[in-house]
Picture 1 (cartoon, rainbow, N blue to C red):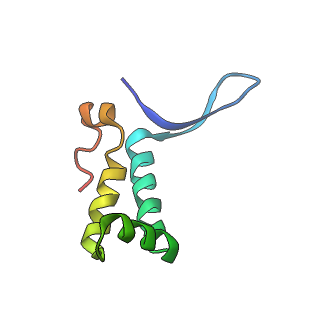
Picture 2 (cartoon, rainbow, N blue to C red):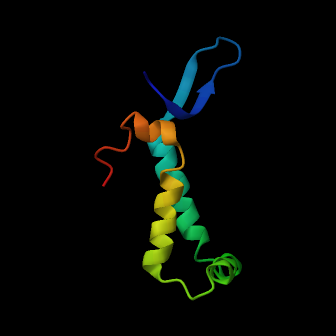
Picture 3 (cartoon, one colour):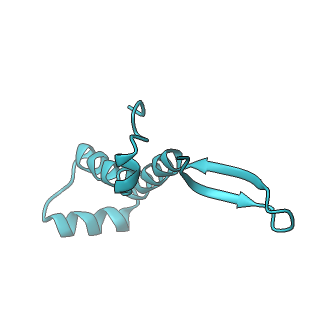
Length: 83
């Protein structure tokens, strides 16, 4: 079974023009999330909710949650070899 995170199809012919695998999409989501964590307003809100100052490791761990947001993808083993 091939899974994908984003798919571009030519509307006229129905042919797949481009695709991004689900695992690559999840890595993209996690990377963007981690960058957003460095924005002052987002960091401030995360720290407010946490009730403490967050470390870089804390934010990296949150990014892992963003990476693993698709339980089915984890079940298919799509994250093997990403590390």
